[in-house]
Image (cartoon, rainbow, N blue to C red; front, side):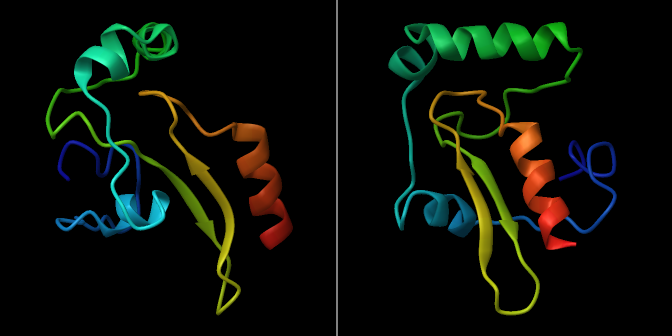
Length: 107
């Protein structure tokens, strides 16, 4: 958490030890891949690595390194999930224009 906050996020950070968020992204199961097929032999993942490195994004190799991530944008009250993005290749980023569009609609 200290590597992430407050550098990237000024609000509350919650440590999800049971990986409930990641399981929710995968419809109840963890979406995982291994370093060989998920990264080294995956041209998109390798390109994502170089894109992040070129942008100056700081990274570390902490964690299991096998679990895919993503993004939920949640509406207020009981409106639920307004947007979901699931990382298909290691290092995929949610399309910023889509996220901004959804967030603008929610305001």
